[in-house]
Length: 126
Image (cartoon, rainbow, N blue to C red; front, side, top):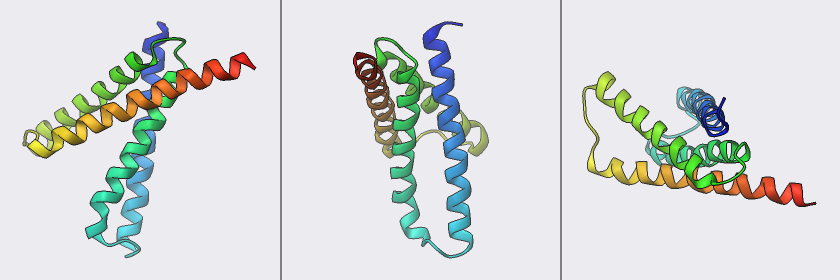
């Protein structure tokens, strides 16, 4: 399998698994009143950014060079998947504020992927 395709698959899989785990944790927090629903929006947004960084890092770690391309591919596929889910399941298209969120998610995966490639090179140098 192509190196970049394999890295993209692992990055997306990591993002989806971590998002599902985070969703379960947040659902439990809300169910047991450990978190107010008013703070949920910002906590989930920050958690999503961290998860996107981790997914980008994993995909970048598996790529030898041009980690930003792999991170961009992972981020774009994730964002398109969210758009399709929102359109098909909720019968609504994206709102104007979501464009900024999606751009931040793509930047997070690109940043994580760049860090993953550079950490890989640094560990091989020593």
